[in-house]
Image (cartoon, rainbow, N blue to C red; front, side, top):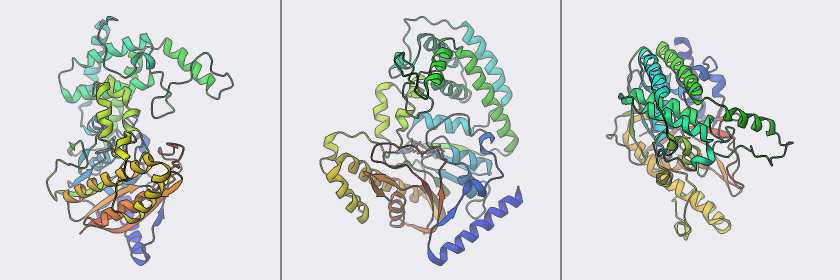
Length: 448
Ligand SMILES: C[S@@+](CC[C@H](N)C(=O)[O-])C[C@H]1O[C@@H](n2cnc3c(N)ncnc32)[C@H](O)[C@@H]1O
């Protein structure tokens, strides 16, 4: 392993040297660079699904490299999502600090990086099983505030889910309770009528009228049949067992106890003092690319992390969101980035909403970049992972605009790497005028 770490140091030093000659981005393939690690089975990476997860090879590359951070130093991810960077930081003997506006993301990150006593988890899962068996649910009880609950869940599934939740709520230790809540959340979408192939809940085409020649007809019919007789308790038990195994694997990898703190809920207002972070690695949201809150709405409701009335408020805190009322975009906002403003003025004439989404995205990302620069120590690195996109069929150079913002706010580009990402999770077409995201830019910035 040590030799691999040294290899990564040497590889990066070569990249730096090459970049300093002509400032041209360097093509890389992170999966190949870190091919010796099987991330799917690594520690707790797969305890819960999450939209647009970062390829763990990327943080691994930077975190296992003395050039960027040393043992016990502090690594921040201001858009930490499901905690990929935070977990890799801990596994690389670094302390981690996270921040995310989505309460489900914060739950996943927290659980993923907690050092649980596996024996206690096993005992509690036995106690929980007994508690669930003795929980009686009356159909007239007030169910959790889940958006369109009867549309997404068959009546028998709804009753079973509620008895699991009630049993989880009897656990008094908050950290352990969160582990079971996460397993429960993982179970929710699997036992719903939502199509598991799609990130935002879309009802699987299970109705009688669905054309039998439809490519997913057989699969959908089989899903409905299995849901009608599904034992949610068994499914929940299987998820618990799989996740406990992941914590056993994590323990085997991580002997030192490192801390992970979820410091804040907004990357624009980090609850962190000036210049105390040693390294930042982050993959921020894209403009109008992922509906994080909608994608998690069933989980947020069932775990009681958000009522359905609060979903809109949560969405408003999301950088890159798509929902605005007409009065928000009566005039186009100025981002201060000359090329972006020129392009957005043209787009505004065709589609004012799309132009506003992109302009507001850049304005809010500027606030987040300034805040990140504030907490980073001088002469330390900020690794920003971003991609270009299309807005109304026009190329929108997100990574270039973010880099410009960074350069204007105390950060200097020392290297740019570009990876072809054909197989990453973001490869879905978000709306008619947006293109697929086809390569990932890794900007390595230094605070001056
Ligand atoms: C590309 S995802 C990060 C994925 C993460 N690297 C992972 O592997 O799971 C971007 C994240 O930014 C979060 N986000 C959006 N607006 C935010 C804000 N204002 N402050 C903090 N996080 C925000 C979203 O909730 C989402 O989890």
